[in-house]
Length: 160
Image (cartoon, rainbow, N blue to C red; front, top):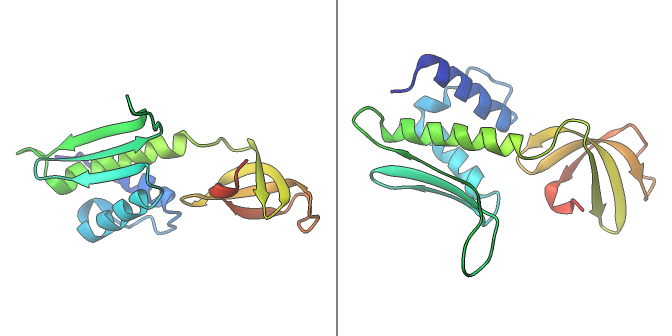
């Protein structure tokens, strides 16, 4: 059974991950919302794999592509027991992943460079506005379309 403080912290963590401004959403209590989040996680790329089985759920992020071994940057599971339902297990695993995912990316102020359709844009990391979309404060734009100091949103796929 999940403790009340753990539920509140987990719901807040997930809401931030989704850039959701409604902090009253109770993700822990709604299978539909949990499945939507699983779809988002699996949609982050082919290396993200969230699976639900009869007795446990598992989430792994595979970074390596070697034939001998696989490098899992994140590999965790939660088990369904008489004390923990499958929904609680999924919720706890999502919270673990979100904490890892947000901590493993960038720190506010980190200088990032994007190469977008032949142009270089550099800027200070401000945060994620949704998974894989980064908000930066522009410090350089080779196309001179964006003024220095403006904020723009860039997809992670354009990172150099």
